[in-house]
View 1 (cartoon, helix red, strand yellow):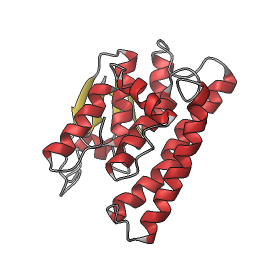
View 2 (tube, rainbow, N blue to C red):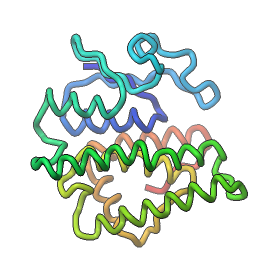
View 3 (cartoon, rainbow, N blue to C red):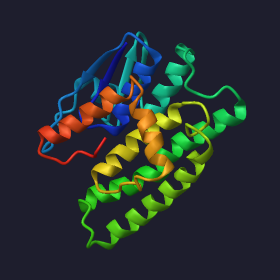
View 4 (cartoon, rainbow, N blue to C red):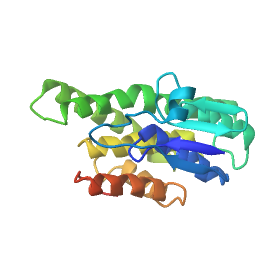
Length: 214
């Protein structure tokens, strides 16, 4: 198995953590990336497999897939233990919903901060920060009676950990006294999570960017 990721890729980090949680023998290859040119020129396997020319890309024998959520699903089908979706249909549906919301509901606010460089004077920034704060409040309430988003640790936690790290990098930080802070500590205590997140923070620091506190 070979996973193509990048040193500053939120979606690549999701796939890296999932592979590590599964304990799979997998070569993780960081494709060429720079702050200035990003992923240009595109890695040849990424260009060949993903029409959008984006990472992550997973290659495993005849299987060549992209998009972090599809990689999650393949890993769960191919390597069912340890399980990273909950056992019951109801909890599994909720975990899938929350994983989707991290990517499709929460992530767009981070992308706005990225476009505005977090400039607090811009109305788009203020709107995005308000949306982020409201989402954090919802997640904080959800985590008041459970250790992980869907009860058991799941892909939903991996997805939200990655997007919230990048959002913190752009200035959207949750209240440190909330349940989210305790959840974040539980996440960073996981052997599969901490190395990936620390590597992201190190890359930011090495490129003279301020990394979020971990």
